[in-house]
Structure formats: C-alpha cells, structure tokens
Image (cartoon, rainbow, N blue to C red):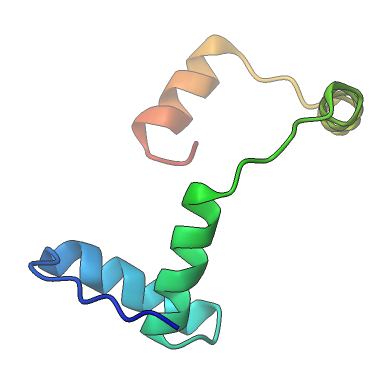
Length: 80
C-alpha cells in the first residue's frame, strides 16, 4: 500500500476531520481514506430512487405547513 503525507492542513479543517472521525469511531487516517474514496468514486444516480425518496419526504411534510414569515424567522435563527 502506498503512503501519502499531507502537509499544511488548516487547523479548522483538522478539527472538523477529527470530530467526524470520532463520531464515526475511526482513526483520523481511516477517516481521510473514506473521504478520499467518496471524493473519487462516482456513483450512478437512479432517477426512480430519487423520485421515490422525494415523494416519501413530501408525504412526511403533509400537514406541516409554515408561513414565509415563520420560515424566514427560523432561518434567521439558524434552525434550518
């Protein structure tokens, strides 16, 4: 296996990477490998699956309407 050294990682990026690694119960090295795999692996999108997911989500929202004012207030508060 090849070894890669990454230099000059910004502190904030390293903190976020470390946090995500802890959440996923991975080492930082393993988390970096997963990030690289996700970045370079193309995924074929199935339009039928996307539409079915959208329909399912739409059904969950039935009866939970909010006004533009409520939406903008929640957005301003950082809740959306």
